[in-house]
Length: 304
Image 1: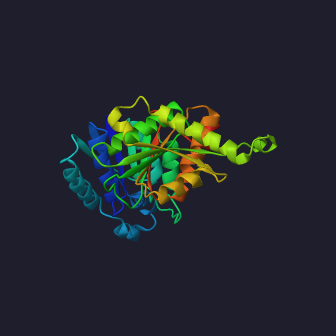
Image 2 (image 1 turned 90 degrees about the horizontal axis):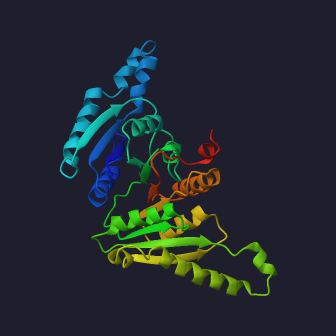
Image 3 (image 1 turned 180 degrees about the vertical axis):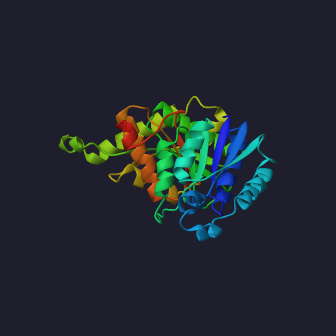
C-alpha cells in the first residue's frame, strides 16, 4: 500500500479516524499519509462576500485551520514514514473524491459523520456517497477507535474479492489476541418446501456444507492466520445487511471487512446494497475492499 488519504473534518470526529489510520500504517504498511482538511464553511466566502461581507467574520480563519493540520502532521510523523497536508474548500464528499483521484490514493479513511447532513441512525449521506464512488479501498469509521482489535467480521460469498477482505482482516489482528470470523448468510430455497426432505434437514445439510467451504476458503492462508480464523453460517430470511449488523453487535465486533464482487452491473448492485445497508445500520468501522478505480452502487452499476 502506497498512499493513505485521511479525510479530516477539523473537529473531534478526526481523532478516531487518525487512530485507525495509525493502525492501518502499522498493520498494512503505507509509504505516504495525506491529511486532507475539509471545512465546508470556507466555500461560502466567494458566494457571499459581495452581498453579506459581515458573515465572513464568522468563517474560520484559514491560518487556524492550517495550524490545526500542522499539529496533526507532527503527531502523525512519529508513526508514518511520510506525512503531507492539504486544505480544501467546498462540499466535503466532492473534495474527497477529487483528492483521492488526484493523489492516486490506495486507501481512504473517513468519518461516518462526514459533511453537514445528519443521519442519526447511520452514516451521513455524504459518507455513503464517498464509500460508493471512491476509486480505492475505503475505511469508514465511527466514534470508536480501534481498541485492541479483538474481533473482526468478514461476510464471504467465496469470491476473490471477499477472500481479499478476509486477508485484510487477518492482517489487522496479527500480533494481537484477536479473532476473525468469516460468515456466510444463506436462506433455504423456496422450492425446498415441495421436496420430500424436511426443511430442517435441508438447512442442516446446507449449513454443514457451507462451514466446510469456509474452512477450505481460508485453507491456503498462513498457519498463524488460520489459527485466528473462525467460520460461521447464518440462516436468515432477513436482508443480508441487517444480519451482518446484528451479528457484529452481538459479537462485539470492532471491524467489518466487505469485499467487492467485481465490476459487472449485477455484482456492483449487490455490493453497493450490502455495503451501504451496513453503513445505515451500525456504527462499527467498515472496510470496503475493492480494486483501485472501481466504484460501487446503483448508478455506477447502470453507468449513470
